Length: 70
Image (cartoon, rainbow, N blue to C red):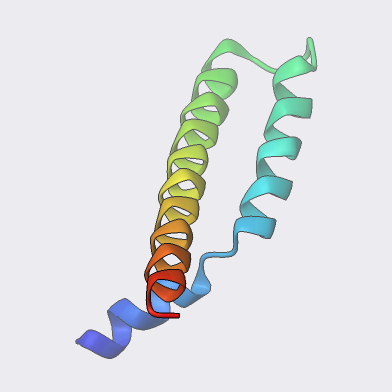
């Protein structure tokens, strides 16, 4: 079970998430996007943004720990 959890965290790519957020932003600016689709896209963007934030916080903590050990 720990392997599955580890694999899931390795699957997340901040670069891919940022690319998707850019795609979402473009779609939200499109006047042809329905309100329902816009809401779903907005929700996806918020979730990706939160994952990116958490990922960056984890990296920052790891850097601080490594710096303290030097």
